[in-house]
Amino acid sequence: MPTYSYKCTKCAHEFDVQQSITDDAIASCPECEGKVQKMFGKVGVTFKGTGFYITDSKPAPPKKEN
Image (cartoon, rainbow, N blue to C red):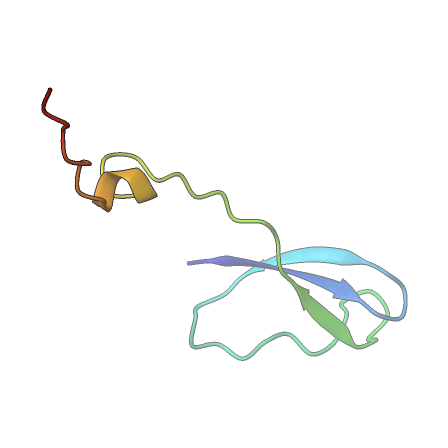
């Protein structure tokens, strides 16, 4: 199950909740019952292998004959 991060707009309490993708988002803070916002973090993505760079998909330039 994915973990979602929330932050209260009233008391600034931050907390994480494991929820199913189909579950409704949390609406209130467990500390003060204030409104919460879902926080989005940075996602690290690494592309490895061929085909991810502009030079990988271009044909090689024609060779000049002398």
